[in-house]
Length: 348
Image (cartoon, rainbow, N blue to C red; front, side, top):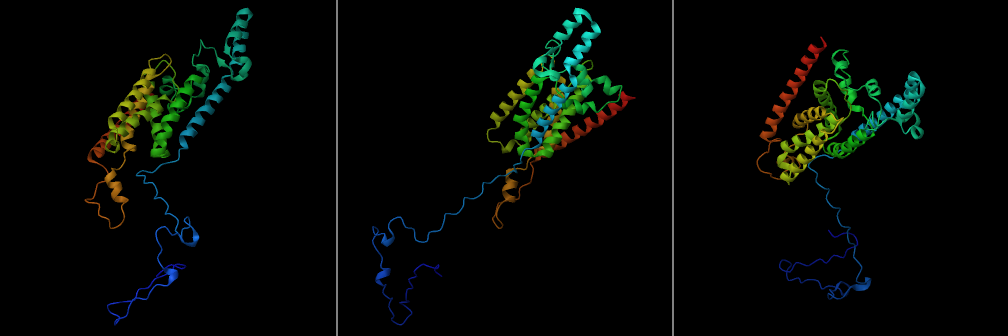
């Protein structure tokens, strides 16, 4: 059936029509040569349809909108500002100078803070006291910093969580938030806020536990343990999803170099490498549990048109992925049980 507005040429049956011949075409329907464009000119398209839209881009895995990691960054910055407000270095220095008295007290008051005229209450402790440009240790402890004796003797286990949201100074928070921005945004886009948020918090607590075990005499703050947990999960994700990567060796070498450089930072003074190691190990095993992806063969079969043969049915996960998942799950549960028993014994 021709479309409305189009001219139809209907042939007459020659063989079965009893000698009937084809009706001659009228002059208005006569075929013209290839150089003839008709009365509408060469650029006219007779009732042409618009080109079909391009097919949607096939994405084997869902892409998430990252909002949790930016919230984490904002929360860390807000808590640092509140910590500096609570620190109030000029007032503390003035009180200390008055207690000492005399010229020595005045000198202590003058040298106790940095950038007092510009920042006022938010002035930093002297660089001699805090080279990371931040508050005093007493203020950090008051805000929830980790100290082993506070956890074991005073039963303040909440410090294992609060310490990962505090930072010792401007240098400290800038380095951590930049790393979180670069690493966390990418992971949240690929795996979603539930998995990455869980991984971030549990890795941070794992780093706090390691720090409490080996850094008994010092206080500890910072999101470094949680960040190293994200790095550890990236390594385990690369291993368990090995078959979906194209440049496997390049991806592995790049990630190993990033991890090695970040671990080397732990050699510097005032940096808690035990929190780095604890967070990294926690994130590494959690990555096998939380970041396992289905294989491509299963996804292609799932998204294939109905009735289109795709060969033998593919399993969702490969055998080695399931084995790694089981091993990592057993280790995570065992460590959690051991930590619970150890904490109860220490507190008693």
